[in-house]
Length: 498
Image 1 (cartoon, helix red, strand yellow):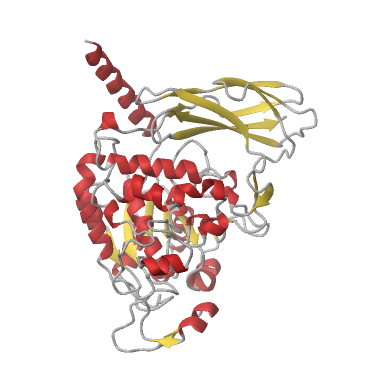
Image 2 (tube, one colour):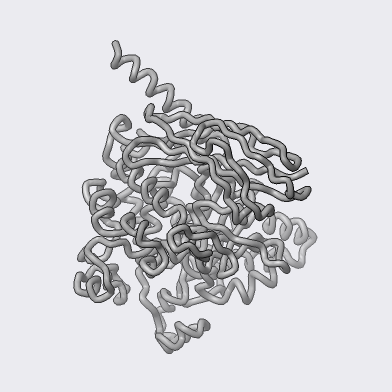
């Protein structure tokens, strides 16, 4: 009888969790990728998170580091100074082909029956296979001609669904630029151009990891200035190749070989068996510079077996996972996909950089990488839980707590006491711990506030007496479960002075 009751409670918790997770519509997104090793590892993790957003396109593109060539022996020199010096004039460059996404979707198909036991919304393997397209790949920055991939992006940007489309740029921007150019060429001299221009500008949101060709600068920025852009040029390094120089030693265990061997690479199904790590003996076809699998190469570079290589593009989809941090409302709020600010002269663009810093408690200094680094342990635990979903039954795996939204916005006068209530449940019945903290770097009020009982579910904040009207204070409720691995979700409360 007790077992029956527990199973009924588990079902109730599961239904509640799914309902809470699905309360907001999923964000549409298209991924463009050049197939570098870090793109592949980002893609494998993306598949495990594919229930969290609506993937409407997966498109092969080129970049300054990877292009196919036109098959005619045409020589090409990069427009990007560093690449031109490094590679000179050549007919192709480190091209991994246009079948690797299909390969990993086929591996995803093998674990799909297990994943759907743990969460609703995972796309079918057949669906994902059907949205893989080849874009502009002949050369870096090639955008002179329409391709299957650019036409596919164009069609989605012009469809009747007004919802935003997040365009993830893991390589070059050229296939997206070609789609926009094709729209311009078709409509610019027509009576519909103004409405089409406004529609596409409202709809397209670019999340770019570096500029890996010149097409954004040379075409998109000047011809589509109202398209919103999130530009990650600095914070992504904490999940990219030089991570040992960026991530504090206190957090590096989450990126080292023992952690990956135990939690990701082995005994977690066929998809994760393909995840690339240092010294794993694997090599990408077509890319002679992917030598990370060679143990001698790993040792030479200071890595041990199965250490993390790179997922430099993952912040582009971390940004879309709704964990309660509200960063999709404004790129400056900060969250799993980093924190960016608008430059003074462009209200449609958010950027990171040396001027966007969070206080790093490990180094005791302001740090331009820490807006991303601060989530490393939580993100890795979340990855490990999803790896378990690939092979375990629901009752044997862990699932994130559900933080129920209370009042997320308050106005308050100086010296006022604002009461805050945390309300969360756990689908596995785990014990929950609560922590309230001030995200000091985000609020426009730059002083510290007093949080009474910060480790209690319910607390209160004393508003400083020098707060000015319109200034904001950001308070984060962090709720973690007692499962293994420990999982965390949030609620952000924004208090505005009045």
